[in-house]
Image 1 (cartoon, rainbow, N blue to C red):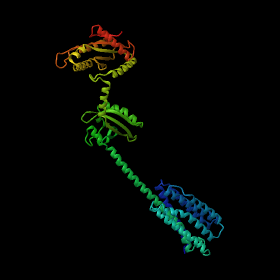
Image 2: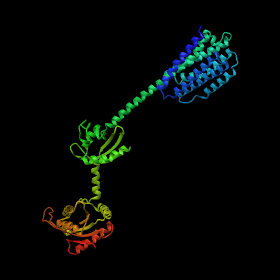
Image 3: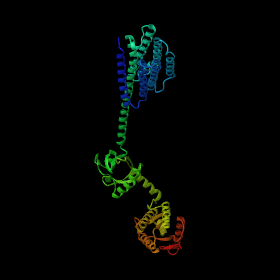
Image 4: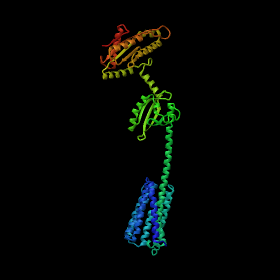
Length: 512
């Protein structure tokens, strides 16, 4: 026969063991809400048991009502945890209804004889457990292997409770309080509390299994992400480097190939190697790193240098990896071909196809910009309209090819006769325009224009045949002595040019 002390020691040892297991599991799996709900149910069950056995020293009605109500509440929390774990949703209304029915029944039967009260309460608790058994052995059977333990131990709990109910009903005269425990009564009483603890241990293991599987899946995803990132970093199209203090920590093969370096040759090297000169290196540092420190992404198109010294245009983008480490990640793409195509397009759009000089579109823009600058700086500029004398005779006598060669040579001579700050443009035919800026005195303008006239008048050899020579007539308007916009100044200069032609050609006339 089991003694009361043996029964208490066994139950409290089981409770202490499971409490320790649950505490460790909750610390290890803080992200599992279902485990926390089960823990609350377990503490309620333990509190219910303690209250039940307290009737040896306290009021029987409090122990009976409070103890059994706490046990039923604990089972409701266990059911809640199981439903959330398996189906990710709260318990159905049936489970809550069984809990309410059980609590009401306990209150109603508090004054009934012990065998009847034991049979009714045992069956009500078994009814609460039944849906949990069905769920754990049904949908949970294939979800987590440890849920099988939960279902089996809960099923054994039902068996123990039913045995208690049958024992109390069939042999009420032999059914005594557990303080006067018989072997059969003690075993079933002990089983009805120990089996739920076994179910709790199984539930902890199920949570551990799920967490382990999630970690394995996460590890697999991280490995896949690492492989994908490595594949992106090893791309053949985009050069990538990681810098600290503008010194290379790592570069991919695409960047090494872009700049003409061997694999690993740039490791630990200063990024200064990639710049055309010290000024370009310092300028990018002044522009880029304040933007990176403020959390922005820096992007620019800059001209850099290959290992052999050849210039290369690079579309460069950088981002700060960490303010503490000071590391930055830079991506670079070779856009040299794009820049060359852009330059060719701009050359076609803004330059004369025959002479390479700026055309009317570009000339108009430069005149507009120069006028704004003159107004701001209180300076002067000159718009000069130039037309060749005798070009038509050469073109008719020697042919259009010869005429084109003549215009090309005249354009070259005009360009070489003006200053770097001046603009020489061709409007079409044998008409050219000079934009001279700045012009402090009229004498400065005349010096440049007489140099242009002298250069044009020199003989020109046009293939076979004798050398030929042409002259030019130039009309000049000086701004702001003569106010107006670009079109007005060109019109004034054109009129002055015709005055020069009528005055005998090969000379300069000013619009007054």
